[in-house]
Length: 213
Image (cartoon, rainbow, N blue to C red; front, side, top):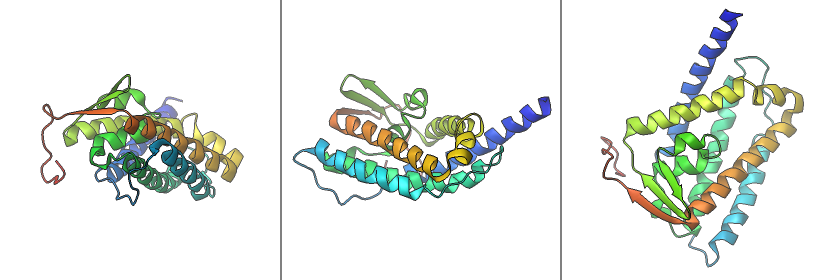
């Protein structure tokens, strides 16, 4: 029994690390957006969110996760596809609010994963009413936050989360999860870019080779 728990924990650590690496691939540089500042940015953002949620459901509807602790391996490519769609959604929501310049690495992590691990993202963005205080972080600090998120996702997938209900509900469950997750991302992004964004950079060290900092 103890060996089984150790094996499961080792798998979670491995999965969490791989997931964190995948997340970093998507948050380093925000995708370009063709959206222009909208007269009613919330209305436009809601329309973008509805379209993206439907696309996310279709994209992941073929997901079938094998039972067992190694099932996450087949899920990771689906998560990457979902995050690609969601990062574009966040970039489009920022653009229709006229705040593309405010979308950096920390803001992207916050929008994508606040609903996943609110405690971890507080190290990067703190909300005070309608004001959002963003702390620019060094790459090691960002990696530490993303690793926490990756471990949280891995624990949910391998423990009592998707690895149990996906084999039962199949494509329907996967699509519903992607729709719901994308809707939460859009809710966070709309609230964030509609608010006042206050960036603090005095405590962060610039990343070597990062041309955006």
